[in-house]
Length: 275
Image 1 (spheres, rainbow, N blue to C red):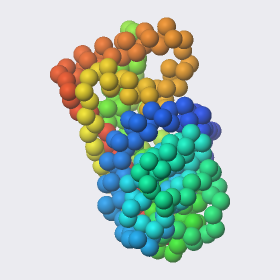
Image 2 (image 1 turned 180 degrees about the vertical axis):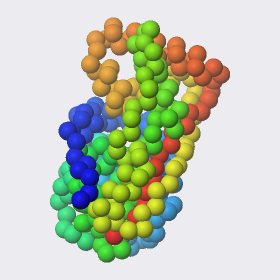
Image 3 (image 1 turned 45 degrees about the vertical axis):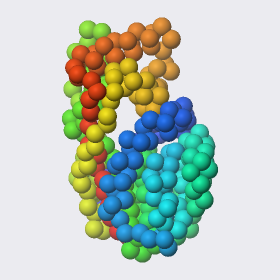
Image 4 (image 1 turned 135 degrees about the vertical axis):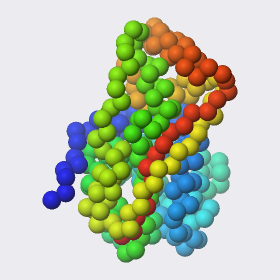
C-alpha cells in the first residue's frame, strides 16, 4: 500500500496566509517564481488547441505566461485575494482565455478526463493530503495528458531560504539545523507519490534560479510583503517587536552577504509525467 501522505493542515494549507500576502506576492514573488514556471513549461507539449488546468494558481504566475500559447486555462485557487490579483492582471494584460475557479485542489469540481495539461507549481506541496491532490490531477487529465508539478528542494540547496532563516533567529540564538525533509523536498518521495497516483514517465529535475537583490532593506521589504511564513511571523508580533526583529534581520543580511547588489539562489524540483 502507498504511504499515507495526509498531514494535519498547517498554516500554509489554509487560505488566510496567502490572502494576507496576495498583493505583495503578485508584485514581488511572482516574478521570481515565473522563472521556474518557464523551466517547467519548456518540458511540455502544447499548442493553441490545448486545454489546461492550473491548480493553486495564485496570482497567475504560470497561467499568465502560458495563456498566449494555449486554447484555455482553468485557474483554481482557494484564496479569493489571490484570484482577485489574477483577475486584475488578466484584465490589465488583455488575457481573455482564463476561467477562474475558487476551489480546493484536493476536490476539483470538474469531470474526469477534461484537460490536456495539469499544472501545480509550488502549490500541491502544501496540501494536507498530497496523494489526494495527485489523484485529482490524474483524474481530470485526458489519457496521455501531461502533469507539471514543482516543490522546493531541501533547504541546504537554497541559499536564499538559508539566509532568511538565519536572519530571523532571535538575538543570541544559535542557528538551528536545517529542517528534516518530510515531503516533496525528497526526490524519491515526490516520484513515488506520482507513481502511486497512476502517473508514468515521471521525470523530476533540479532547477536553480537566481534572484537579483539591490539592497538588504529592499530584500526584506519584498520578503515581508510576499512570503507567507514571514508575513505570518510579523502578524504574530506587536509593531515594536517586529521592528526589532526586522532591524536585526536587515543587519544580519548586510553582514552575511557583504557587497551589494548581489544575487541569491533557490533550487526546486520540477516534475513532469503522463497519465
